[in-house]
Image (cartoon, rainbow, N blue to C red):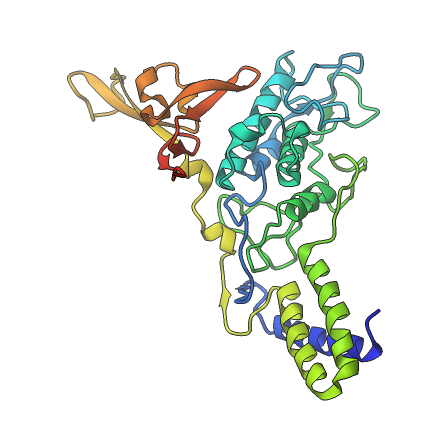
Length: 359
């Protein structure tokens, strides 16, 4: 049990930290120099790249008697799924989008998706959190009492889904840019400038998509309790030296929790300055097509067209030898969806990054 003097010193440190935060401009981010970044990638949340498009899409209520068989998201979805399209293949298409977001987000975190093809059975809490997040994003919940074919709103993932992901994957960018619901005055840059945050409701809720809340004490909170327990005894045994030592450590801990540094501030969130992994992993395919007459850039009556795709395996016109950068082959990852499986010594979604091989 922390002593009264230890708690008093902690309060002083926390007030000092909050005073520093108040001096940071509202439209700026502060950098915590004693913090270590982890899983600070762009996009920061699984499926964030499609969230604006999903919110703008037209969603309809499913047939209450229909229970579509889901494969990839079957274990993560416990609700009636809203349909993006009215055809019978809608849920399948939405699952493919979720699978794609899952594959690329794990790749962005430098995890091999092929080691996590069955996330429900995977022992990694972070992998499971990414899986639940993408399934909640692309297979949103339909309101309980909606009628078949009725237009319904898109129910964004719950706050608990977002927080569960941040906790399980220990996401840390060492500034205030990682927020499930950005605070007033915090603005992201394009293409995420319209992101206003996930729902503030906690699952289960009629206002958002998500299963029961899964939360664990964050590492900073656990660290704080450890510090308090250890150094409270030092205060009692050596009041002068122990108190000074405790004040220093708790001041640093308070600054870590608040994400502040009195020396550095910046206008863009740390994760936004990173390369967008959806662009980094994309593949460009150059084709020669018949000239429509609209462009003047021609080659012998033909025009050269460059198309971008996030998956060379999805390009039927591309020769197999050109897929996966020649360092892998297309294999089925989820039902009806194939990605590159790299040969030994290569990694990333298009097998373009060399990987060190242990001797």
